[in-house]
Length: 263
Length: 356
Image 1: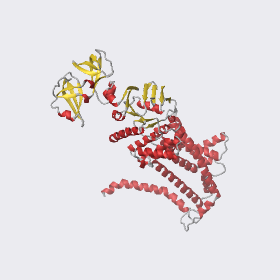
Image 2: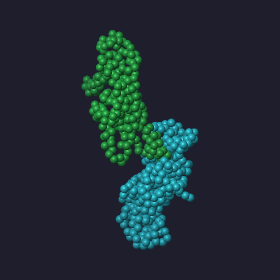
Image 3: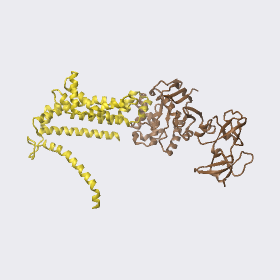
Image 4: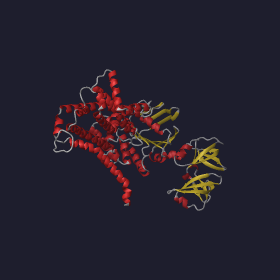
């Protein structure tokens, strides 16, 4: 009994962890289960199962278009945010730069400004500049939001980089640009891949900024939102399940890649 | 013959702080030259100026007779072995060594041949595909060395490359470095604060202190004929005694030291009579006897301290005139000594006059 008593805190810790896991997974599982129900409304009991909802979703032009549109925006965002983020990180990590802390604070600001405020200010901003709502405006807002994450990830990696790696490359005949390309970039790769996947995922996930800045063409979250307003159906569950599975795979791959290059 | 490297009146200031002052140094081809000195003496700055990572404040550096001070590191035909190796972690051993060759635009098969040849020179042929993280400290050291040698530099610069290794491996690498230098015939410029490393490997040692060259010469010359108190103290250990010059005849000066007349080599100085000068005496150059010897210098003293060091024993002998000398005896010499009363002396050529 004594050992049992001693193990109690550990048991309690384990139990609370599993409770949390169930709390996390249960709603998702419920959503996935309901996407397989052969009926029009979402409720137990489930009398028969079907994959028809998935077939319907995959043939849905609206869904396909919205997905491709979201992916396109995400890729454009990622390219812009990575270039700007790496550039800012290099600027901050360089010695003797005046106002280093200010640049860093400014670059990180969009990560802590509430999405709604960000979206409204962006809307006012593009109106002032006569930029129409639509793809360009969305990419602009998503990029601003994604840059801080790239900066922080790249900066963390840069700080662990031995200073004389670049010196060694220069010494062996590389000009500054070649040294950057062949030594700094490969060293940053885990952070770059992680940061880029993070950019893609936040962009695809974003609703508020897209809602304020979007044009007539819906992104995936906007499409799902519109559908939900028309009433829940297992079709929405099927859509959400597909998005969940794809993003999970991408996220896990990113994690795996970062781990592998770290060892 | 024209020196490979020449520093002409080179100065380096950080603000008003001088790191290197009035440096004039010529290095001949094929030699193993060591810059030796305590930290902050300017030896690393000198190396980095030659590598192109620091700009001299004034003066000019010549490589093979051509001024190079204005050239960036990638346009100088010198390569550095960095203190912590700085191997590229994302490249294999093979690709690390090939790095400089690829930038020179060599063909793939020529690169492969050269890398293979270099790897076999340090018995690492089986490790070509390994990543740096999978190598031991000594292996990384060898890869860094081969990477720097691969592009065939005019001079190889080594920035305290052995300091991260343990004592045993360090001794082994000293011998290996020296043998690689002899095999390749390359000029090595080695920077260290470790006098033993410098004595083991160098053809020429340049002792630096406070940004200036104290003395330059072969290891045996520096050890036997230190010109300044700093050199005599930094390389090996020395007793220092001060005496007043009585007379000078040829190379030998007679001094009055606390009432005793002793003799010392003038060591290139020209001391004036009645001037007080410093004499350096190596602890192992002193003899220590229980009987007063005939016809040789002998000062009476008493052993006041013994430190056993294994291969030898260090004695502190306090002389009748009140001064203490450090005497180093091997076990054979020590076995002849019983009791604490001894006679101390030295051959006149083993005592050298210092310039300061």
